[in-house]
Image 1 (cartoon, rainbow, N blue to C red):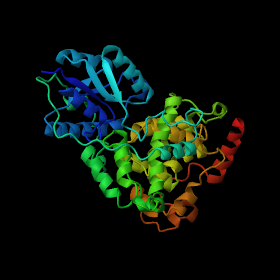
Image 2: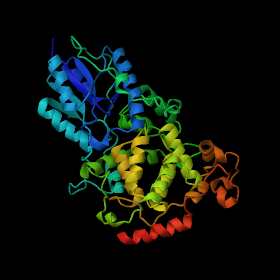
Image 3: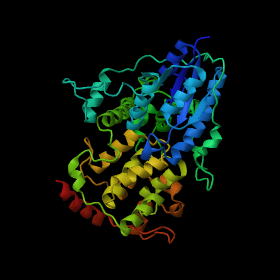
Image 4: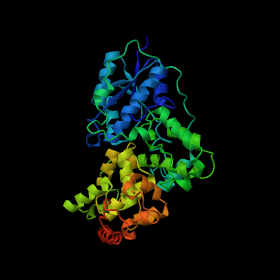
Length: 457
């Protein structure tokens, strides 16, 4: 019998439009392997919310594989060591995988390639990161010209079909039990609301696409309204590779209206990967070095403000609603993410890296490229970023984007307050006793931020 081939799975947990799987099937019997590697990423180990998602996504993938005559092998340890062990057990020499661009995954790929014949494929982005370059051949650092160049090579290639059958090896290697990895929280189980919000796995991803395809034409009208929720909510499915961005593009393109706006947002994932390919430490280092001189607050007062922000107790209803939604569901509305991030950075003058770390641990769609690029954009520290002096006014933003019902849902202390008072109950004189006063006034925070910004001019 032909020697089996290993399929190394990471953030590509799907069967449809999966080029590494298709190539492995072409070679003969396939052994799909997922390795939980907490050593190679070091301080970038997967966050707690992402681990919840991973548990359920792996369960769903194993069910799908078994329907095709296969199964998922689970191992824990360093990827290169565990894949080498599996290969030795079954007599495999080749590993097929989809290429990843996070710095720790690139390190892991180099390590695996030293032990086995590693064949990497592109398939997690609209175009291979690094392939969209300027006329001089240099990679883009600014989003707008990147998007124009990417759009010129779209649509993505034709999709690969879901296989009818996956050839199995003569015998299977040993596998860990998923429950032994303890990916789910227990004491306490803070993720009880996640299951009501999400269905991890490829089937859940396709259901989300089906739900959104009829709404994409109105995307630009609804995406900024938290109370309506006009976004696609595809981000965790895309992050874990439960569906390909090419599939999303093909399903959405041609729907008219503001579909192009949505596709440009989909392309932001590609842009973020191109940034971290050029600047692997973007999650920890300012894209603009002069921001190293910005006088971030520290000490007990700043630590107390950081906790208030994390808990949704800042006295700014739109910020608190977003932070509580994040804790309850592992996700936050995109417009509110910008408001909450701006508040931490500019109102509280707390280093953007504190917020990035919090999002890394609490978001089910925590993605190194997106997270790093978005936080640096809001902070003004990135290579393509908002200006420091553009300070979002959370109270005005809340009213402008009609966030009243969103606030009532996530900040129940304010549920009985009507518009427009709900956006700033303290100023309206109706702040309930159970809701905190503002940690800082908007005007005071703005002046403090502008003064600090002068240090980086």
